[in-house]
Image (cartoon, rainbow, N blue to C red; front, side, top):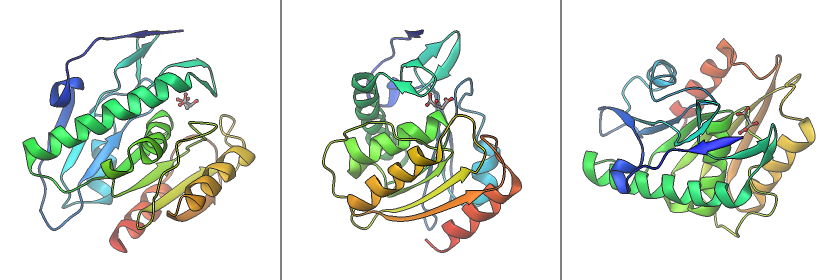
Length: 210
Ligand code: MLT
């Protein structure tokens, strides 16, 4: 279903966009959904964190020409070896970008496939992220590596009638993150897989409390 674009290593591993910000605001790592690119979430990132630096990579996996962050076998069924490998690759990119741009550990802001790679990265390479906002996420790894997420804050926003993410699945992800020590706030919003003004408002308020 997917083809893979071979990229470089470190900072060159991902085509990306970087928008500078104030050192006082936690940087955001913007992770788009399937078919998006590095430009997609920049307006959302700016809206929820007007002062923050924004680091926005484009997923390296192509599915029918649509960028993603890892391979899937079909909708909701993931190639978990690829998820682990791509999460590590993203963590390496974040480390290189922090050096290049002089950044603190970022908070991921991921939508759909981008939220799923953010959740995977929390388990595979916890040091890469200070926390995460997961918009319409689902469990990325059935049995994730044991991780200590103590001190990491995670906001999960899901849709009550999301046709892609069953409630059981997202509730399981929240439990997995809590079991690993993360401080998780999980809100179920009216609506489906698409984002609404409520996502923006809640994400902004949560970040302000960070
Ligand atoms: C995924 O593949 O990560 C999820 O099914 C969400 C999506 O991208 O549709």
